[in-house]
Structures are given as structure tokens and as C-alpha cells.
Amino acid sequence: MLSLDGCFGMQRASGLLLNRILVRRPTKSIRCFHAAGLLHQALTKPKPEEKREKLQRDELNVKTMKPPRSSQNPSKYLRRSFVPNFKPPRYNTQGNLEQLLLKCLEVKPCTTVTTAESYDLTRCISQLHSNGFQPISLIPDEIVTFKHHCDGSTGDVMILGQSGSITCWGFDEAFVNQNILKLVDRARINPLKEEEFETEDMDYVELEDQAQLDTIQLESGNSSLNYLEDSRLVGDLILINSIDSDADLLHKAAFSSGFSRSTKLAVLENAMERHIVQTRTITEKVSKGVRLNLKRGDALKSIGELFLIRGKLNLYSELIETPDLYWSEPQLEKIFKGTSKYLDIGPRINILNSKLDYSTEESRALMGVLSEKNSTVLELIIIYLIAIEICFELYHFYERYWLDAKPTRDDGVKFM
Image (spheres, rainbow, N blue to C red):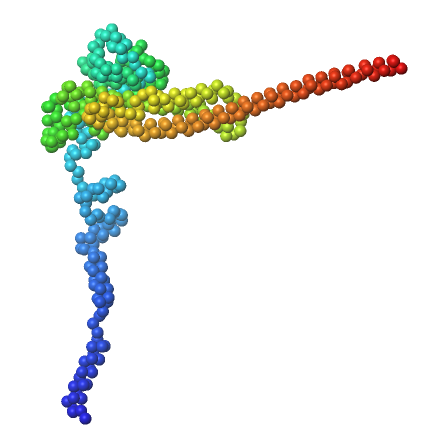
């Protein structure tokens, strides 16, 4: 038998066990869920400042953009119209530098005009000498340059022989058309009509001495504007560094080559557009089933025009490649390629080649239709000739077997 103390001990132990079973500690998952709820409540609980801002927005009924976590990283807002609380440096962007150059330097026009397929540079030099100018062959067989004075201002004029273009630094389009083009008019090879001339004009500024560079550095608050040491495009503005007078003309020549590339390409683009307008009516007639009054010679002429445009673009000029001079001069090559990129030369060449492909395919289809039509006519002629030959043979058969047999029967009757 158990003693009384033993019974009380067992009862106390069973009570403690029952209490531990009924009042258990929460499991790990319950603790984690409870902690996550507290964390969410702490994160979503609005701060007093945010409460005040929300109340103000509700009062004004204004919808605003969600405030960013960090307003000092502008790359996160590339597709937005503004960057909150971001202040760019004063003159570190293309637009700000362009405004600074426009403020500190004199702006002059640069005009490029394409008037012919090419220029005879030897004849250009002789004509310029006869008009009292002193031309210089800047790049042999490619560019001739001379200085032109008018109303106290002096500008450089560059004649680009292979592209048939003239670039004038310091003169606008009206002055170029009235006074410059006529100086070398007789030196043009395969000249264009006046309404077919193509023009490209831009503004440029020129750093002529160190004092101007110091002024720009002072205005910008930056004494290390290294990007002003080289001639380059700054936004929509050309910067020519003329402090080094030896490189001045070469830099202008590189820009001139880029501009003449654009005007030369524009001439071919306009020729292509005229061809498309001419052939569009024919295509519309074919689509409507209307009979074509088109000769085979006209179709051959159309194909020849397309081949000529393609040849001028890809074979007979340097439109699709960099001139040899700029391969050996990295700075000139950089200027030439930068100008070509600014004027979208690459995409324009690709688009023009695509149009040429489609138009050539269209002209070949028309040639196929005309060839089939010609074959049909020839077949009909052959059929008519065969029919005539059959008629002659029938007549000969009639003579041989009908007319010759009739007198024989008459003779037999008389004999009897």
C-alpha cells in the first residue's frame, strides 16, 4: 500500500503534466507567423510626416507619383519626363555646353550644296585663278579650297570634286547660290538642274584663340574642359577648334565630306522618289486589270534608271565607305563618322537600297508581262501564217484535183 505522501506526490506530478499539456508553448510556425505580422504592421504603419502629406494631397485632390527610394540616381528615371530632386551639373551635358558655346562665341552658317555628279578640279582651279582667287589643293584630286571675302567677313570655300558639292563656311544658302556657285559653273560634270540641287546647312562656332577657351572655362566653372580641345559636334552645333591653325582646314574638310555625303545621298533619294511616282500609276493599272499601253523600251529604260541609281550609290562613289584619307587620321575619321551618324547616313543608305530592291523586282515583273504579251503576239502571227498556208494548199488541191479532172470528163463525152 502506498503512503499518504506518495499519493499526494503522484497527484502533484499528474497535475503538472496535465497543465503542461493544456498550456503548451506555440509552435515554431505560429511564432514565425506572429513575427511576420508584427513586421508587416511595423512597415505599413504610416509615419507622422507621411500622414500629413497624405492629408494635404487629399485636400488638394492631386494624384502624385510614388516617391522614389533614392532620388540621387537619375538612371532609374530614363523614361520619365523629370528626375525628382536631381540637380545636374551646370555644364556637363551636350545641351548645356551648346548653350554655353552659343553664348560665348559668334555663330556662323555652314552651307553645303550639291550641284553635279562631280567637279573637274583642274578646271576649277583655272577658273578661280581667272576670277582673282588663290585656290589651294587641300587634298589632291579630292578637295580644293579658297578664301572668299565679303562685307568685311572671310569664309572658307571647299569644292569636293568626287561628290560634286561645294561647302561654304561663313556664308548662308542665298549668298552661296548667288555668288559662289557661278565661279565654277563650267567645271561641273553631269550637272544637275537647278531644282534638283540639294542643300545641307548647320551653324558652327570657332575657337580662334586661347582667350576664348579661357572665357568658356570661366563661364562653366570647369577649368578642365578637355572635350573642347578637338573639333566636334555639340548637339546641333559644330565646334571648330582653330587655335591650331594647321588642323583647322583639315577639320573643316572632314565636316564638309560628311555634309556632302548627305546632300549627294539626298540627290539619289529624290531620283528614287521620282521613279516611284512614275511607276506607281502603272502598278495601280495592273492591280485593276487595265490594259497597259507600255512599250518594252520604256520598261528597259526604267530598269536602266534603277541600275544607274544603285551604281551611283554603291559602285561609282564613296557613299558607303570611309574615304582613304580618314583611315590614316583618327581625329578626321572621328569627325567624319560623327557627322555621318548625326545625319543618319547609314539608315538612309539601307532604306534606299531596300527601295531599289523592291522597284527592281517590280520592273522585272513588268518586263515579264511585256515579254509574255510579245510572245502571245508572235504565237498569233505564227497561227495566222499557218492558216494562210493552209488556204494556199487548199487552193492548190482544188486546182489539181477539181479543175484538172473536169476537162477529162468533157473530152470523154465528145469522144462518144
